[in-house]
Length: 206
Ligand code: IMP
Image (tube, rainbow, N blue to C red):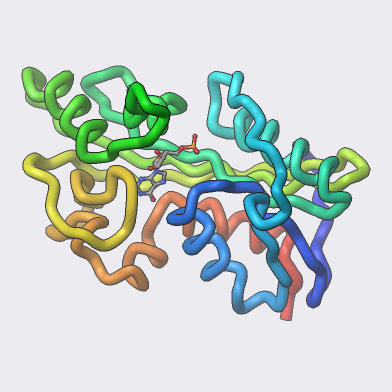
């Protein structure tokens, strides 16, 4: 995933996610760059299976599949929550920990699973990771990764954000991502950090 190719102002890209929370955040981050976006869901694109063991690997699968299917550049996000005492779990399995028998996802239950597995350990260090991959229909691919370090808390706090936000307090803050003003989360999050790298490498400048 080396070399840099830049998108142009006014260019249309696919946001290769079916997750409403990620779609909202990625669209907000892209808004100032004059890039038009359409979601994979709106185009009716299928969700490919995420078979890799890294965030960048899974993001690559999603971006490449969407770019090929849509004939447009596609930007994907693969992200997750990690606990130090669980050797980085749930990690790339973050969404799976929320999966219910009926196929729906329950994040309150997923957060409880993390708490139950990690509570016997003193070390509450946790982090979010985000890999952003931009793929073009001709096969060119660029990938960037960002992390937000912090610790997990119980009980979960706050109803802003999505997913595991209510159990994560980023370093240097007292509020969880679930309590924080979204603008503040966008300043310091794993997604914002990955996005800063993407922007420097691949988004229109000036
Ligand atoms: P993916 O679709 O495999 O990338 O799943 C990512 C998982 O991580 C989802 O379950 C999300 O809820 C969770 N996740 C990713 N980013 C965030 C975030 O910014 N806040 C809270 N949860 C997140």
